[in-house]
Length: 140
Image (tube, rainbow, N blue to C red; front, side, top):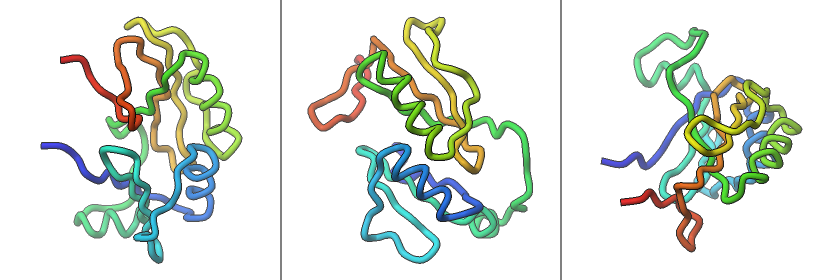
């Protein structure tokens, strides 16, 4: 089993697109239409959909707060890239949760929240490598 699409519920489309396109460097797919936006990210697709519509589709209430128990991770090739990526995301509406710092597991990471509060870890992990397409490859 592997996830093909990760869908995040948003509150304001223009604000969240600015964050993901200008802050995270993603390009919207031509498959995007109306209220749903798709981004190819390598092995999986990131989708943005209105939070209320997403909750309704799942048969849940849209209201909720606090830590959802989920974080997404954006891994970078060099330690110094973490600080640069965080700065770009913050400039485009992200909110810093944890400043870039050396991590107990031997890497370097930071946490930011996107404009709708979705938690992202920006990390450099010296034990993970990337293939020539830029996909993260775990050690076997």
